[in-house]
Length: 454
Ligand code: PFF
Image (tube, rainbow, N blue to C red):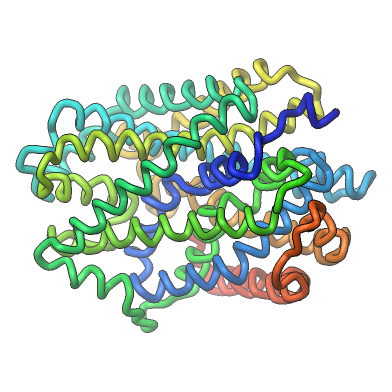
């Protein structure tokens, strides 16, 4: 299919915003802080940053190179590079992971819509202590009607944008809203850091205590680095495939990684000071952000306005991520199975909704899903299976493919196709071929040897 009919970003900025839009989302603001809180704070943060640098960024460039060279989706890219092989299976795993992630991500994204509703009703401007905030949260997520309804609404918004196509839909939304999100996070971080007792949170976040580290924490940091950058499932293959020929890809990729990591760190700078100030437990799990933040709005002048702006922007950040999740799957059906984009968006979005219902009901709505396996909720299990394991295996396979099958020189050629040089290209090649596969295998091996998968 020609580039023109597949669609293309309007330029480098369009790509950066759309790819940063995919990367920045609930992963940074919801998942990162609670994972850090559950896994010991500072030591986790350090590990996470290490994983971003040593694993995330190299995988990002591997995926972008494949997308640019082939102008195909997650499956088609493997197929185009080595026809008649089993390598496209890696792409299929990616598509499954995209579906799996979308099916729980849209539930949490739905909660942000519920919170936006509360913000409009002025619920966060009034006195809201940790207890009241906790009660509001459990009330919302435990109500089957609201949980499923908001999930449906969120998926509907996602479908409506994805059916509009790459540039018109995805890019336009990201252009205005990502910078606005950044600005509001900055204000919230300053407020949180100046709360009484906030400095203890800063210390928790920045001073590593390695006695807290476990194999599970290392796995979580690896999974989080990949999840946050939207890697290991072909999203960046797909987004890279729409990248304009004449633009500087290595630089654009680096900017996306920088923007994503800064937002995660910024979210941590809000969450931990606020949490210590409110006397909450950092290891509270997936509800952490939703319970902590209202206590910050409460302490701001014009708290209601901040709450409205924040939840609107968080919902939009989540939307630019769900768009990319659905886009991975839609792009496959459009390119490889010749479906119309419109049909693909509706059918696949609809199927995803069905798969999302158990997760939506798993937070108090229906007992079977609340404590599904290993005393863990259905939503959490999906989060770990797809978000940590599937992405790690996908990233490992992608790098083995790029490093050993397709070849580093060809990948570098694709990345440098516009004539812009890639910095550290040979170091990147060594990491992709040796360091990264060994690191991921070691982490997975640790998990298998401890048997503590969740
Ligand atoms: N990176 C997104 C976030 O951090 O919220 C989540 C995500 C989007 C993961 C797209 C994977 C993906 F393909």
